Amino acid sequence: MKFHFAKTEPFPGVSSTDWNAWNWQFRNGLSRAEDFSAHFALTSDELQALQTRSSFQVRSTPYYTALASRENPSDPIRQMILPRMHEFSGDGQQVSDPLGEVKHSPRPRLIHRYPDRVLFLVTDQCSLYCRYCLRKHFTGQEQAFIGSKDYTAALDYLRGARGVREVILSGGDPLTLADGRIEKLLGDLRAIEHIEIIRIGSRMPVVCPMRVTHDLVEIFRQAKPVYFMTHFNHPRELTFESAQALEKLVDHGVPVFNQMVLLNGINNHAALVQALSRRLLFLRVKPYYMFQCDPSPGSEHFRTSVEESLAIQRELWGRLSGLAMPNLSLDIPGGGGKVPLVPDFHIRAEGNVREFRGWDGQCGEYIRPREARAPEIGAYGDEWAAIQEQPYGTD
Ligand SMILES: *Cc1c(COP(=O)(O)O)cnc(C)c1O
Ligand code: SF4
Image (cartoon, rainbow, N blue to C red; front, side):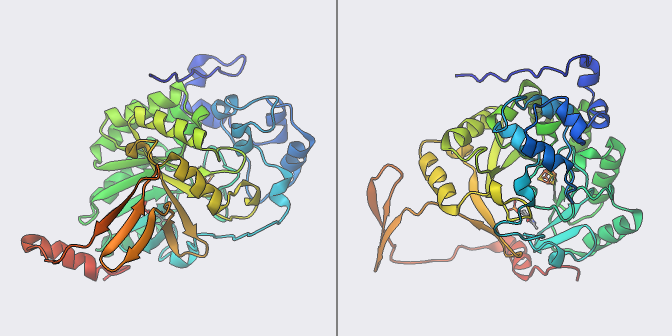
């Protein structure tokens, strides 16, 4: 079966030329209660939340807003756009910097938590402020592109951090920057000898797919290998326009991965995860992570329990192609890093025998072999030694 990706209807009175131009979408972003009341029959709770001053901004693109239901406040896309009074309740676990990023920041805008890869927060702006955002302490403070002093300091750090193989451009959304800035940034990173991989994290294929232009993907191709991480949470976000954006990336040699977040009352159902993952895979996008929602302030009503998430993953195990299966994972609050959550198939370990029960109930034993032998590592031993000695930071 082939999937149907529906075309999005522009707002009434907007020409398709304007609608399909990303700078029109940026300039006409919705942020005030008046903007939203023109497109939604707002509930009193939504209206009150829009009128309450929040430290975390509200913003959406016209394109993404057009995907949401005008009438139904439970609509999944509408819930990701519009604030609710729950956000201000102060309920449950609330951690301002749930990933402990501030303490792992050796320079402004850099987060160095793992030896071989560094997060580089190049801008704090997004064209949609997802209500459950994990980085609310940074995102949307309108500091925009990193200042030139911090930029030089960040590049100096990366040049000196010889254990770093991979730089992950994040934010904020790096694709809110102009092409010239992105091209310069990629060029500066490519000039650093030990950086092998550049990753770009962006929600733009979801919230403003017209941003993925031919010029932009050419810039990525020039800077190869560039990996693209996007963030679809619901099959309804996969429209004709977003499918085109994803195919354009892949056609230009940019591998695309998806990181979704399990969200209470939005996508916490195996059927939705399955539909999203199969459609993404059909578009040559690999479902990569399925995250527990982090306990950032005002996110309590979005979070699912670990038990519920594991049950969703267990339901899909074996029934969904391994290629389409995202890795369920949570970030340990406080900065402990990512932890994989995998259904437990191990039922017995005794002496040399381990017994497993598979996804459909069939059991079997795996018996430890008699002898362990190390392979000859030869010329590859240097890389291995470098990994083992890999320091954090500069040497
Ligand atoms: C998630 C994350 C990464 C990337 O981790 P992968 O498992 O390689 O995708 C790197 N740095 C930080 C700080 C992260 O939170
Ligand atoms: S796109 Fe990412 S950084 Fe921006 S608001 Fe959404 S979750 Fe936060």
